[in-house]
Image (cartoon, rainbow, N blue to C red):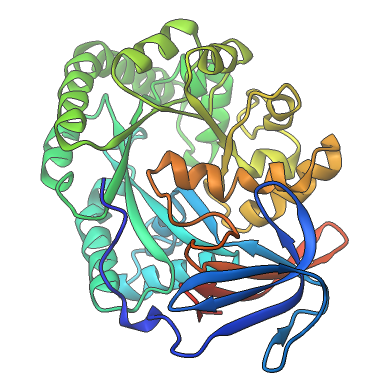
Length: 393
């Protein structure tokens, strides 16, 4: 897998060294007061101590973190359609607004999770797909995006058009991750039908409509999910992409994902699935909003409970970008865990899950993707962000 993406002239390395001093550095192993020297976009020197050499930027004891790595966010979609039925007329502006939001949350590498197929009646995702991908591509190629943007293709297996959509877009150069999803009511995320009804409560569907939609969804799943899954898995293997399962609930779900070559388990629904994922070597990702809120919005397993039991590897902001910078601090406090351990869940670990070895750590020789942060109580305030040594916030 190639780690270098399209060169972005807006984020070219600084010619002169950048020295960030008197900072509380959060490395993979420990937290200590020190300084970082950056040149040619790379961390050249990491020193201990509060001394600020001439020309250094004094962080006055604030945190200096590695740039966060986001493995799964559908936040970009809500910028293109900010309200139901409201299609933003300038797709590139919508993507730039999303980019600004993730950077202000300390995220320097982001996988934009793009839905291939629908899982709800009359959803907008197929309608905005081509426009959204074109806008992300334009933002990347023109150097307008501040963060590194890759693509995570979320494949809704029961959608009749999912294989056609996958084959049309899997060749995008920014694609790095594929996940297999099935939101059919009655299983996985929506094993509790009442939770499915609650999720769609704003639709004003009648009871008859709901029963019809459930029956239609189950029929599509029975006919389409297996052949679609086989097709996409074969293409993922051929292209050498990372594969993730999604909303695993049973041991059988996990074992199937492993057999297909998945290395990532996104948002397991049950403790049984989380236990099995750990036993067979899958890396488990849970939602940072789950941590911030203290539980799942779908009534499923708690990310904090998994972290407490040592069953959690990484976090994703999912639908709320700022949760990714807040969750590690809350997790460290609530579970009495070392901050470096929690911070690795949003930096080094997701980077490695995606095949990156050049970012996610404050370490000599790694990319100078860095975040200057002040913690006010339990609320982080991002003061500055650098990507490859160039300040982008």
